[in-house]
Length: 214
Image (cartoon, rainbow, N blue to C red; front, side, top):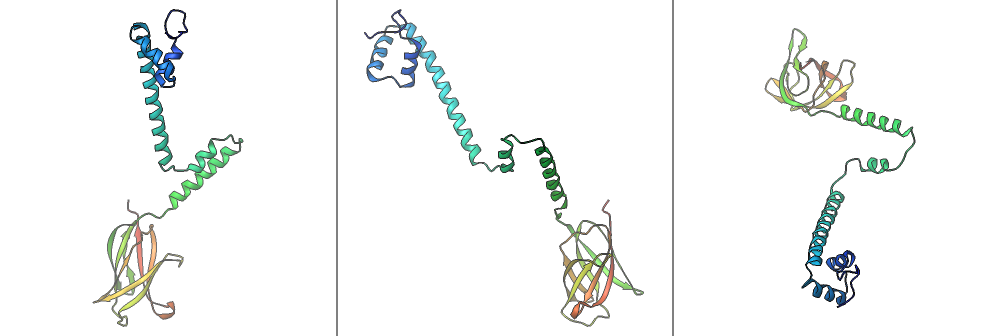
C-alpha cells in the first residue's frame, strides 16, 4: 500500500481533499480507494470533505449566476455608480448635490399628461366672450361662430394674459360652432382663444378662465 502522511496508517486531509476534488492522479486515487475499503476513519473524513466540497461548488455556482444576472440587468445611473467606486475630493459632494437638484428640477418641469377632456362652450354675450374650466384637463372647445364668414376650417390659437401663445391648431365649422380638441392642460389663470384669418389677424377673441382644481 502507498505511503500515508499522518504517521498513523491514514491519509491526511490534504490528500483526501485532492481526491474529493478530482485532482488526484490515477495512482493516488487507486491507493485511496483501496484504503477506504477497510478504513472507517478515512471514509468518515472523506464524507465530511465531500459535504464541504459540494457546499463550495453550490455557493460558487450561485455566485456565478448572480454575477451573470447582474451583468445582464439594466443599471440606472451606471455612470454615477462607476464614478462612486473611486475616491473623489470633498468638493465632489457639492457636485452630487447640484446634480441631484438638476435632476429634481427636470422631473418637476416635465409636462404632465392632461386629464380627461372637458367640454367648454364659449359664446358671445353682449360683446363679451366668457368661459371657465378646471386646471389640468384637456379641452374640447365649442366656439360660437355666429357672425363669422362660413368656411370649413379656421386657424385657432390660445394665448396667456401677456399674449404668449400656449397652443395653436384648427377649428372645424359644425353648425353654429367651431369645434377643436386641445390635447394640453392649462395652469390656473386667464387665457384668450383667438379665431384667426390670413396673416394671423384675430377675427374674434374669447376669454377663457382656468381655475384651480382644488
